[in-house]
Length: 200
Image (cartoon, rainbow, N blue to C red; front, side, top):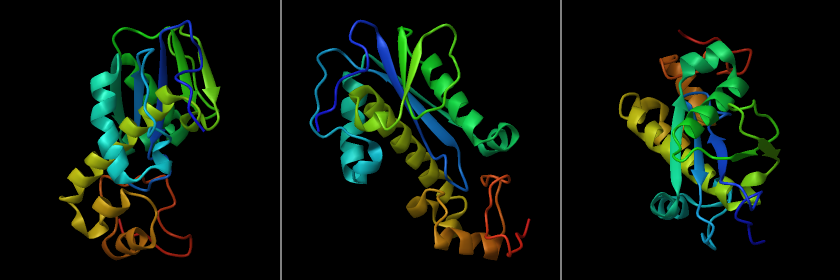
């Protein structure tokens, strides 16, 4: 199915999305993107539907053709303090703050958002598979978060974040069981099945 450019057609609209909500380690990362009216791309879709190779191809295309784009990380300490939903919305707000010009309308992937200044917004379930500007944001959120996880992998290679990106794979949980947790782990998340003790 061909994606539409944006939810509105008569406003300067940004799409926003996040990556990493379900991870045990690392930040939640959001991006916001304003695409030009003439933007077209037949590959661009929800980042979860695309291979890493395709995401890496799309990232520089989006960045070079966008009217404006920005991304932001919210780190584990803050995720633990305000919860993952609020942290995801905060990351989206931070990303939108980085846009120039300021958008007149915000399209949000998902069903939860808090108003950003006085800009009208619309939450759209599976918006990243319906609108190009949200799909573009999903690509930038995912690729920038993945790059960060590869970076911190060098510090703690035993968790293999380069491969699992902080998601709760069996290998990641086995490493937590064996080595304990790091400053990059989200302490309010269930890092191990309930019957296993975490070494802090």
